[in-house]
Length: 192
Image (cartoon, rainbow, N blue to C red):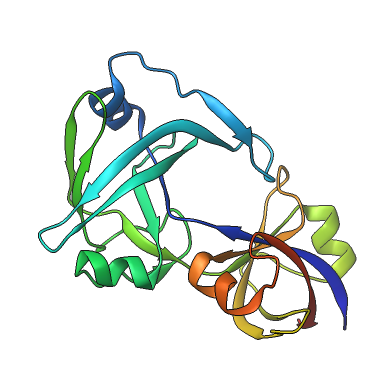
């Protein structure tokens, strides 16, 4: 089964709860959209924060909107080493028993007890796209990148929601290893 698919790179970023956003950015603060992302309703905001652990810090961590029920930070393995922490590889939203950090914004600081993950590589699609490709939510598959540095990524988890659009998300470590364009490229599903 070979199906062409868009591959996107997801750089380090954070999702903030309303309570944490107000502490970090100001009371009743509204995120300022600088760019819509490929998944409907999601956007890169103008705002950035600093993530600080006992071992190090990451500056200019982009806040991705909209506001979420829980705060989480998604980083790469390379960035985890810089922070001297060992976060698990998880799907977005699965933050139980993960490392925490101090988050520093323009108006304040918040200590989160958990919430730092390395994002599990995943494929977004809506129910119609999933049906057409014979995919199910939670299924694991392999995706091959195309080009001179072709790599096959296994354990790509399918995420199906009505507002999703078909694309694979890799982090910057994975993308730099495999994609000549570096930002957005093409690949194919090679097993489902």
